[in-house]
Every structure is written in C-alpha cells, then in structure tokens.
Length: 219
View 1 (cartoon, one colour):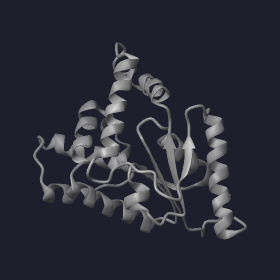
View 2 (cartoon, helix red, strand yellow):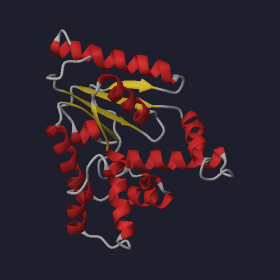
View 3 (cartoon, one colour):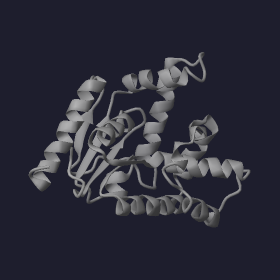
View 4 (cartoon, one colour):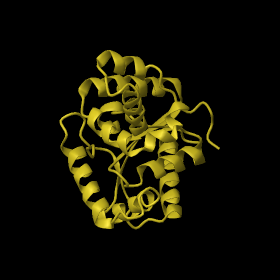
C-alpha cells in the first residue's frame, strides 16, 4: 500500500484501442490512484448537446463543463454511436478543449495521486507529470479488440470495417490542428500488441512503483 500523503501524477496517452484505458484502470485499482478519462469529458458534452437538440455555443459549453463530475462520467449513454461521432467533432474545437482543460486541471488540484488518460495529456494537460506513458498497438490487433466490443451492438460488422475506421481515427488524432496525439520527450513507450492483461499489469505496476521510489524512496 502506498502512503496516503504521497503526491504523484501520471499522464497516459495513446490511440484508440491501444490499451491505455485498460492500463489506466489497472494502475488506478492496484495503487489507489484517482482516474479521469478525458475522452469521457467530450462524450459528456456531446450527450448534452444532443439532448439540447444540437444547439450549442461557448456559453453552453462553459456552463455544462462546470457540472461535470466522475459520477456523471459513468453514464452508459456516453457510449452510444451518435455521442461517439459528435464527441470527435467537438474535440477539434479550441474553446471546447480550453473549457475541458480547466476541468482536468481542477481534478489534478483536488487529488494527490492522479491519472489522466487521453490523447493530449502529456503535451497539453500534464506537461510536468511525474510519469508519462504512451501506449501503442498494431492496427490489426487494435481492430480485433474493438471488433469484440462492436459485435455486442452490431453482429454483422466486419474486421476490415473496424480496421478502416481505426486507421482514419488514428490519422485524424495525429494530424488535427488542436492538440494532436504526440509521443512527447521523456514518455515511456508501452507496446501492448503482444501483451496479455497479466503481462500488462505486471509491467505497469512495476513501472509506477519504480518511479515512485525514485521520487520518494520508501513508499
């Protein structure tokens, strides 16, 4: 068990289906870190926009952003296809990213041991994080993982469709004007292509503990 008075921050980035969310949850659960998935923030706003008949502006985004909390981010409706499409669109808007950056910085301020995972965390949100991790995975393996999720919704969906969708998303994330997905200097690369969940768990927990010891000595 890690001492409660320890202050430590972890920035986790990676593309869709690279394992960053699973990895973040492993660290959070095993080492009692507070976890925020930034993608859920955009999905939350997207859902609010849909409920507001897709009418929104800077004032609307600002007001809705102030109402976000971790409990609201667990809403299963945030996983719907329409929410997914709209969240990708609003994520390209600078004023939306600015408002949600405030939410993320407030989360860091209020908690001692924090993890934020997303696509621009180390570069824009937590440039001074104690540990930066970047997840990667082969396109084929990512498509296989995501196909299992999509089959629950659409049993007819094909692997090549999922692969094409992920390829387009990766290109968009890396080349968008606002906060593109970047591998920043000093980040630790974790390739999950051939890792089992148990192997990932061992690798990540060992990595975090090693960095904690570097900073605090006895934890």
